[in-house]
Structure formats: structure tokens, C-alpha cells
Image (cartoon, rainbow, N blue to C red; front, side, top):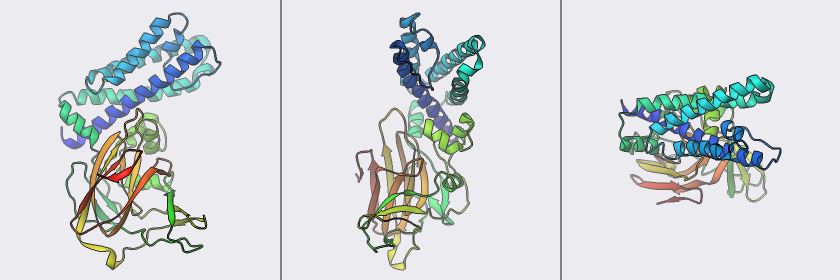
Length: 359
């Protein structure tokens, strides 16, 4: 199996694993809500532990522990993801039995959730079987590096790789000379991008986000976004459709004016004779992976989903700003890094929630 296929199956496997821990978290919450008779109940929960809260508390805790262990050790022993899938199927069967006893109206949303998670886990289980011949080292490498391949921006090939390689140079538009239209101040703050929930989705699809995995699993129209919200979906660029620079949202630090602006054309004095190479690593150690879009000077170049993801790309523009954008279009906290590039130089950037800095 080639590297592209391996990355696709690892992405599905990790999506399934992440959704498994979502089930665990909400089931634990519901366990205590029901145990203490609060009158509240959350969705996204397994039903079996809740059924046995009073009848057999130890069994309920044991089922919860089984789900959690399947999540916790699935990467080390990948067969555990398949075990987690089987456990969830058993849980679904018990829900169907309750449906016949209590009526479908009581479980409509629970059923929708269970169908959704079942499909995601099924895709993960299929990928488990596909990955049985893949070594642990190759699996780990595919998990940590998202290969976004040769996409495009502004009609020029985007040299983005997940393998640390170098691609052809890329002339990006710029944002260095954008000013507040009301007071002319250069003290402006980027707050987000426009259209990520609409046109932005089409742009992401055009540079090949593989969010269809999440979309098919969720049965939702906005597949890339929905899949990313729940578990994170890895991206892989494949299109040759030109991407226009994104409309950016700003707030002036002086007069507080909020305004929109497109990146400006690259000026001749901004050009570098030799490309500058950027290696960006997103390292967020949290249970629920947070997908982010990566922009440079107003052009989207990648979508990173894994807790640790690395991409490498180049720019031939002197003044640059890289920013990370949430799934709904807002700037990620501490998610902007501006720098001046030098011909033939390079920088290794690390984002870890607390800071976005050069290593």
C-alpha cells in the first residue's frame, strides 16, 4: 500500500478513535447525571452504562472502562478499535430493543447519533484491517504528518508537503500594506476570514481536503466541516482549480473600526530571488483534536487535524503572515505569526496553543 493510501486509512482510523473517546466522555457525564438523579441528560452517549447505573453499577463502570481502554490503547494495539466498534454495535442493539419497548419518539436523537458513530467506527474498523500490514513506525509517521500534496493558490502550484520535502516556489499575495480604511492606521488586528462556512468550504475542497470521510460518516451536507468538528479529518490536496485569496476580517487597534480586506498584489520590491522554506508543526496535546486551516498572506494552504501535524511549504514574498483559523472562521488563539523572509532561508514554526513561535 502506498503512502497516500496509508495516510487516508490512518486518518479514518484516528477519526474513529477520537469519536470513541467522545462517546466515553459524554457517557461518563450522563452516568453521573443519572446516578445523582439530576433530571438532565446529554446526547453522544452509549446507552448500556446508563441502563445499568442502578441495576448493576459495577457492570456499568466496567462497560465504560472497556470503551475507554479501547480508545486509550488503540494506537498501540490497533485491534482494540475493532473491539470498540463491536461494543458500540452491541450498545446500538440494546437501544433498538428499548426503542420497541418505549417508542421511537424517546430515542430519535440518540438513534441518529448512534447511526453516525457506527458509520465512523465502521470506516475506522475497515481501515484497521487495511493497516494490519503497516508497521507501528509507519503508522505513527502517517498520523503525525498530513500530506497536503500539490495544491494551488491564485493559479500557481502550492508547494506543500507532509514529508518535509521542498516544492517549487510560490508567489503569494501580501497583507503587509493593508491599512484601516477609516483612520489609515497600520495597527490592525486580524480577527478571522470571511466565507469559511460557505465559499471557504468550496475553496478547501478545491485544494483537496479529504473531509469527505467525515461527511460520509456524518451524513451531513457540509462534510468537511462536520467531520472536523466531531473528530478531525485529515486533508489531502488533489485539485488543480485556482483559489482566489480569501477576504480577511480585521479590527483597527486605533479607531476600533471593523473592516474587510483582500490581500494586495505582491510588489516587485517584496519578491525574493530564492524561495524561503517554512516548516510548521501543530502540537496540541488534547483529547479532542482541533482541526485548523493554515493560511499564509490570505491564501489557504492546508488543513491540519491531528494533535501533532507537520507541513512544509515555501514563499517568495519578503513580508509574510501565517495564521491559523478555526473551523467556523475565527482566528485561533495566539494563532498568527508574522516574519520577514530572506532569500534561501527557512524557519521552523511550532504552534502549541500557548504560543506560535520559531523553534
